[in-house]
Image 1 (spheres, rainbow, N blue to C red):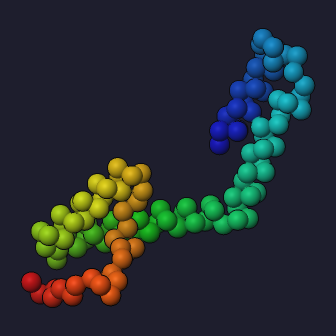
Image 2 (image 1 turned 90 degrees about the horizontal axis):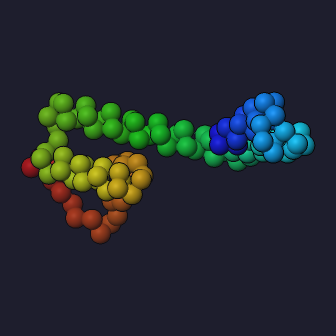
Length: 115
């Protein structure tokens, strides 16, 4: 997207014959559009775009599930506090808080869910 914005700005400057842009070659002015097309082609073919969309959907799903559990009163105060702490840490780090991705290895203590 930044390349498209740069391309539009360069194109507007070239058409308005503003400053040094009036004398630039059309190849230079239109190059950001070509770079944007190449980037989109790479992002789509590598699966990067789909991965980002899937990560966003998973985060929404986990958040929706958590809100539903909270609304039903099926979470304990300890779980709510842990969830809020995870969200805060993820927000601080600029990541998504996905409780389904938490590690539950063999070394994690077994907890009875009835208490």
